[in-house]
Image (cartoon, rainbow, N blue to C red; front, side, top):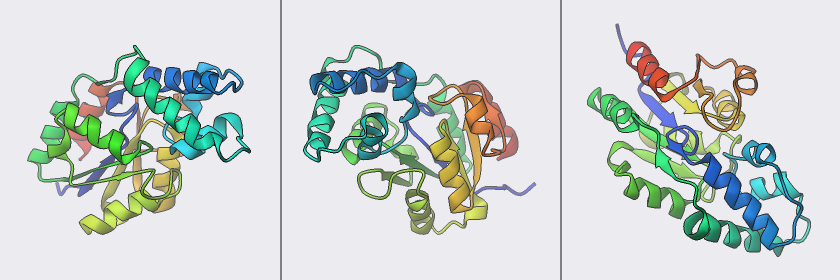
Length: 219
């Protein structure tokens, strides 16, 4: 049977990396530093996947422009320096990516992280070698705008019907829908299954092991 997809694009945080708790704690700490209202874990998880500007606006509806860079600086400080929550790949990610590369598929990353942040974790996790194209929210439009996914497809010369987007948030799935690609949802990240199912993904998987099995069977 011919392969259905030529390009698999992954979200990063909550899909390949277990980092949601670290992101939530850093968003809360940054807000506290600036005297902004305290946001719940659920409110912070809701904006995971968006670019930093969109996440800040989603949480606090900031009207003072100078607060945006100050919040971003405090967030980076807490995320990189003071936060004690782990930031690690989900078990089995290397195996999944290696198997896809061995099948000579194109792989990409479309993430709400900034370029410096993505490059840092790709190097730390030894994942740079797997990916042929990556896009970040600070160098193109934030999800759910389809631009970053479209740019990856354009760069690699792959049509939407041959592309699969894998993500853990409704922003990933809406981006895929707007870009005309198929989508695969994972519910072990930031957003719960009920929110993801609205976008009618090919499947909604509960664990990284289920993702490995689905990709091995269906790609």
